[in-house]
Image 1 (spheres, rainbow, N blue to C red):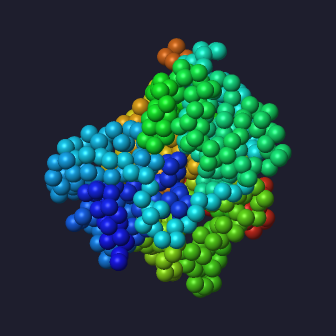
Image 2 (cartoon, one colour):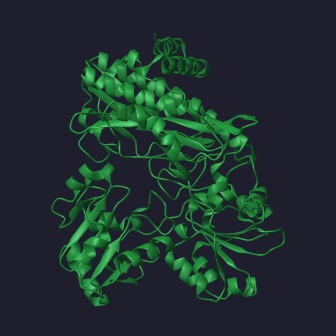
Length: 601
């Protein structure tokens, strides 16, 4: 019996007419342990985002433009139809369900995997169908399901974090508007927010140095729920000194759903949740004991909002990480050129491995910050392409090689994309490359008033691309964590409105692109830090400091199209790259970098 048939048999036992299987785990992590890869197990699609829906007579998977090609390939023979999100004529999940089921049909979902906000929207959208909560069905249908794993937790010292937990709690209390002495209990489910608050890091999730955890914040301290076996005696003492009480991960549900939380709060102290990052399951357990609930209405949640503005120590850590990463890029790029010149076979995977090798020369390197993207030729037209697990592709000539990789260092996280020309490049390719570069430089050069949102900045990068008659569908920028998640909110730079205003300390990517399906792709990405530009009679103005220190391939730039202003800024950037990286290079590497960073006229 196939997986869909097994699942449908379970649905019939439960009296369900359909079931929705999202990506993610009960902490809303971008990457998940294999235990939580339920959507991948049922569909065969392994992309990081997508939602599967199963009914008695049909099955479909919704994926965004990043994964159209990958999903189409992986869904072959699965019995699932691909639904391309935002493509005209493609129904939404609710529309698809309502078109195939009668009013009153029961649609199941795991309440641990849906936030309160998602549940409320979905419930309204699928009406007159009925949304039914059912605890994780995959424990029953997935034979030999991998267990949840817990690994070692480490402390982040003050000279890297820049602020202790007690001081962070004061920021959170002020931001949430709670007066000194007023009692509250804030339930926190997102691992990266908890790691930042408690100044710890873990190894439970690939690429993101977090530990699976929950936390309850009060005006007095934090109750941290982690696997206690992962916390050593020394770390336990340090956590206790910062006002953090440690309980075992498995105690969390009993704590908020049983009498403990009610007793400690006297039954009257409100529980505060951010509905977009609190699962329906946690919410239901918390509200079931009669304790009043208050919604956190700060965009992204109060902890994520405060975390987004990096302090001076964190910002300096980013600068240090970018230099170390830039040195690794120089060595890897040189290796690539030498191998090609010698006529040796170079593959996408070997390029990715060379970057990892050179990064690994530094003790402060922890690992990659996401699955490396090394894409040659037509593969570069897939924004989230990965050669991992596929037949290795040889890097040849007369096309672009797009490299998008990032690393985790103990003091910062990197994410850099460079498009490198190999052999002969067409005039069309050269113009597309220049348009992307100009967009990236225009955004990097922005000066803007306090109160500016990412949607207002987006057109600075997207404009030159649109002027070339091109368009990319992904966002221009995402927040970046401090030795945490490479994709971090709450700020973003994209066409869609985001209520979060940019403020000093926010670290964000800047990555416009052009993708010509079946032929080539171009993306150039730097990481930028929002800083104060000036204060005058008109108010506060901000600008961006470029953190990334990696040369940009200037051999394929149309200088007339780029314009004198952008050309000047490119030359200034390359001068800075050489100044910062050269002290860490030998004579041969310095000579190579000097040529790559030489002034372009």
